[in-house]
Image (cartoon, rainbow, N blue to C red; front, side, top):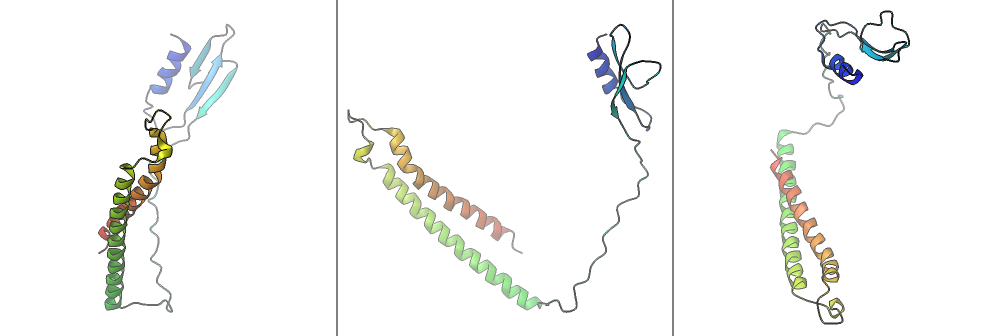
Length: 162
């Protein structure tokens, strides 16, 4: 059995007792390496790992006590909070509508740009230089993606409202 196989066997063997285990790497006079959890009479032993005992009787974590609000903390009535929530929803709906209009406009501009080839985007032979076209279109695509991400974020935010 090779030292690696022995080490793997030692590491993979489950421990049935819940005690502290120490893994040693010992080398004998012949240069043979032995991995063991018992130091015994081996010489030239080095501690590779030391496991601490595991306690299964740990007390449960303490619950944090409820901290009351300070007496001078401003209070909001239920009706006032509902009004604020309604205002928030209206603002988010308005922002969503604006972002959807901006995305529609960005789609329109992108479509127009995709259908157009600039004179500087043609090679000497008249063929289209695709990298130049893609470079010009990149900012239009990025703008559209930004509006689409904003729309998704606003929809998620509206979905989280009560």
